[in-house]
Image (cartoon, rainbow, N blue to C red; front, side):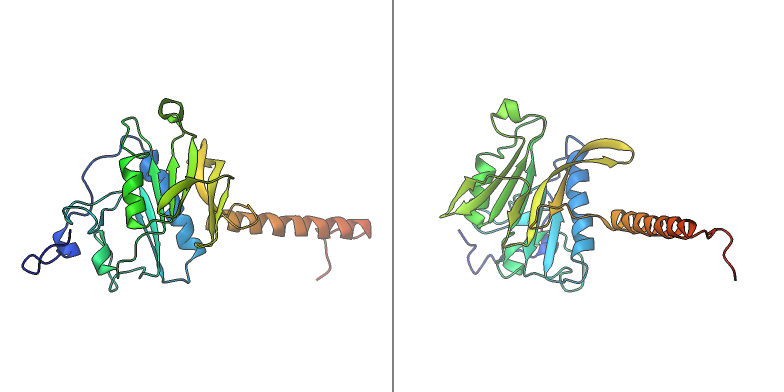
Length: 236
């Protein structure tokens, strides 16, 4: 129910930025921020998207517009990277032309948080097209798969098949891979292209370029030696 004219909707500055509920494991901060960091590299030239991490989404589909839903991460398209040139304290739908996120990520923690029930229903009501639930530790407890992608079809979420899963409306795929963060091997959520290849980070691309240049140099040196030329003692 919308507030009456005598009680206008609050602005972002008047609303809390989150629900102040601390995460119960470090991956709930780490993995969404890795997705954000990679997207900042992939879409550096685009100014029509916003990726929020542990940020309140305020909406008018509930009884009180001051009560937000707070996903672990979400992606909206067709909005400013910087709202009016400034960072958003929260994502307020009535200040975003009612553009709901197109992608939402929830990571299941030690304490069940209604990811498969109340939150799913709320995201469907908001019109979130893709809802991803990542549950690597407690999927057996919850009787679900460790990684699930749901797509909104006829106002209801349908579990999708395939990983990485390509989201054509967004132009990204989402999936898991075994990586190394800070010297520690672990499973990581990341973006993929339409062919199912993992998008590399800026650091990985730079490392790949260095490796290619080294291989090209080694091939050239091998060729010179095959011609009787010492590559370490070339004429000036």
